[in-house]
Image 1 (cartoon, rainbow, N blue to C red):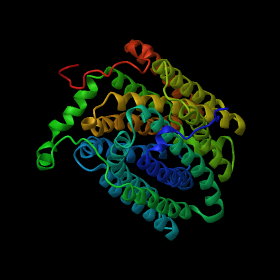
Image 2: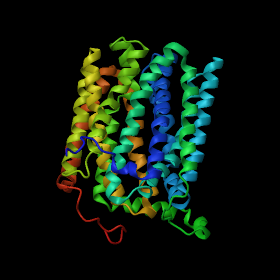
Image 3: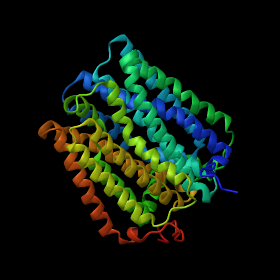
Image 4: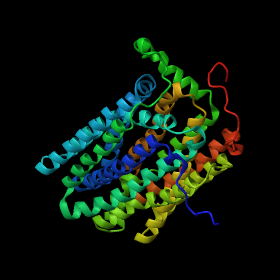
Length: 423
């Protein structure tokens, strides 16, 4: 009897994770519709590439201010409740964008202000959402859970941009924001239906006020600084995305270099996620990943090289291929980084560790948006993208030399001590 080529991924055998995963498929599609519509909307309102620097600032400053507190809240309080409130807040933001756009009153500063509020909500949502995953599946199914999460993200990032171009051209910008607002209902329902989730909190209910302190935040930072595998992968992600982020420049490439319409722009926006989902599907069929350190470094190198290829692209098809490879490299990198971080972090510190990581994995691309916008304004969009890809590859070389243990990391090593004193 032949074994089937595909089987039910192990993580989906856990009911609560399956509920969350299915709801995120819907929500990520709506969120990506809105994301790429915002970029197109900004290009409608201004033809100056420097405008993308503003959106980067609007995301980075609130994230930097609230990320560490968001992680502490995820360690001290019920992660389901945090997700419910943050998702409800983002639903309200999408509704406001739709109303302002429909009325014709929307201006660039409205987009920046609402993006900043959304960044605050995300600073609490991301640590709660990522740190709840190990509470929903067994340890051996954790890499599979993150590969399935990657698939959910990237299915949404394929469907969302593709639909955004179609909806913009047929129904208008405001319709995208309304659709995204409705998509948040899926997560809200899943969080309610899944029921109680066991988690190890950093403090007993009666002592939470005392635990909610700068000292508790410092504990999370110290933990990261004494875990070289986690720190090195966070820095790798930061520098790679700082240099190679080209997302916000895509409308300028699409309209001013490739000269394509909204629908083809949607497919360009979806191309990285097609590559990412392809990698996620392959990894979802594996029980484990060997030679994780070398794979991680190779994945980020591919990410940088593909960014260079995208920067020199003058044709739609070549740009699609480059963006596909960017997504593939980024997805493999993210799966391995998430697995390393979660396995090496105890549950009581998981939210704070994710919040520190949030500064790296969101701070990199958001600061990169600022850098890319300024470079594109001064030297042109292609130069901004090409130099970013070169910088990414140089960052891989530097990190690999500074932390040689990353090159030899396999993934089955014993978990190191989890306290700074023991490290």
